[in-house]
Image (cartoon, rainbow, N blue to C red; front, side, top):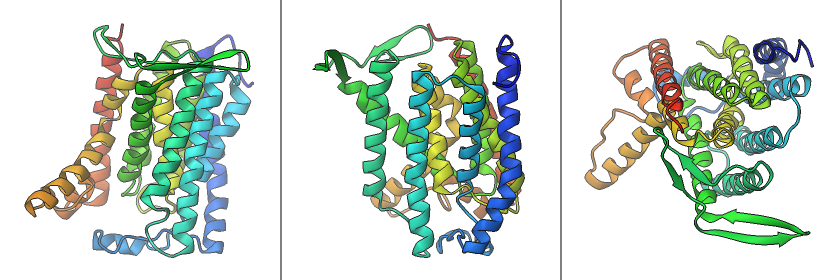
Length: 343
């Protein structure tokens, strides 16, 4: 472990710096490798026409910043149960995204795995994560609300004796964690449509989650979140407009899953939805668009997700991204303020 462990805040900040440095150093090598192998992003034909010039831009950049986070955690953190399961859920989801990216590149199309294949993977990952969180990390199967209120999702719990140990399955909480993890993973994935958009928004959220974990004296989770923030700083150096590389589903799905894992382990499931409000808005825009078109034949937005709507209105890509970063920071600040209202 680098630095003096007697100064935990220093350890957290140092973790962000280490992850940023690793990402900045390794990313050019990865970009050259992707170009050599011809692993380029496939652009949707029905998307904004100005994006067609991005066809073939190296993708799967999430591999590098996920590696940076993992190395940083090995250098800086203690591998407690909560850190192990947070990392496992994040990297399992990232691996699912990697398969999706490889499938997309191999078949030269913008779609990779089928929705049912992705959903099956997310169900498996989220259920295992939830059961480990409850049984290994003593995470309570309830959802805390601002103001000290709580909803008990453990009222339907089955108990099993396995190898002399009591194993509990809180069915409603398992369902809730699945919806949270799958929802956030897909929400970040939907947001990843402009250069620097998802990375910048996730950077803000991970900084706030690092502060939440630190507030709860969860130093290892704080290091994990801070390492993500630092790695995203390094990634954005190459992902800002015009992007030299994209994170791919490898990065976006892992980011959403990591965010959800941190929310569960710090018992901030509800406030995390406010902190990641920009991701929720992006998802709702898609849902509203689909429902409206199927029921009335009319579109609410010029194009969804909503960041494309503003592109269609004539905003430049950088204008959309910077303004969405500001909105994301506002949501994260509001969520952090609500966090202090938890009982």
